[in-house]
Image (cartoon, rainbow, N blue to C red):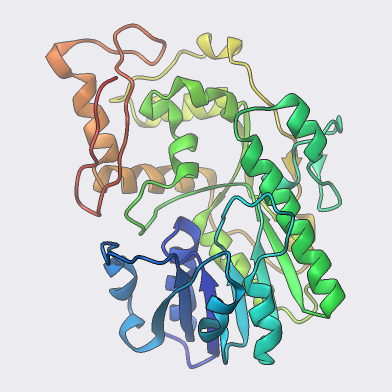
Length: 354
């Protein structure tokens, strides 16, 4: 573990990316304050955070109301940096409330705001590659899309307001824009991006439309990019973060060859899948700044699958496949629809056939 680098604050600490970022920041020598949603009944298990190496000395957990700027003050006080990783859906067209606490602290030197490819990719621009100058067109999303529209609109509006607020108040803020984040996870809940990315293994045919041309990045590369931008003095504006793009057919071929124990859709059946084929996001700006990606495509997928197996998610699906010795395929037939609930590490999630 590296030497003491100062105190930073992370919002959304129980989430997929934030929990991994906390682990890496602790390893880099930072003291970390993380903000989570209020838990009046004290039922939330945060042991996956408190058991991290160095957490007993350098991690403090605060509860805050995402709609109340005043509730962030104590967590941000004395911090040199803030990482906004929480993803509330907000239609009030306002900046993240903790930015006010950053201004009041007088100690925060930089804010790294985690945005999403959802704030870039959805528009009527007929291009194959998009850089940071592209924005999702909110009116286009409202007119053309239903699935995920509320999230796309919220991420776009909130990032714009964060940048506007920072410029108006002379707050040093940069935004990181990851695509589908995949890889292992330490949080107890199956991350939505991992679930979607592995939809063909889970038999979630209704999600195949999101995989037509999928840009992905390893969760550890996302955490590393956050720290890189925080520590890079000349960092400015928006930064796309995406290391690989793969088609649904390419992903199906890889999964079929590497994991033959799971039923997979045929390449022929995938030709009829409909959905939004998003442009590839260029990471040229991030790479020219000196960052480099560490993980290859097969490592992202393999590590995500291994983690799902260790946490019982794919093991449970494997059992359901063979219930009553029925042959189940991902093209339809007798396959049950899997409803995954939450699972703590090492435990099977609740599930039922519907």
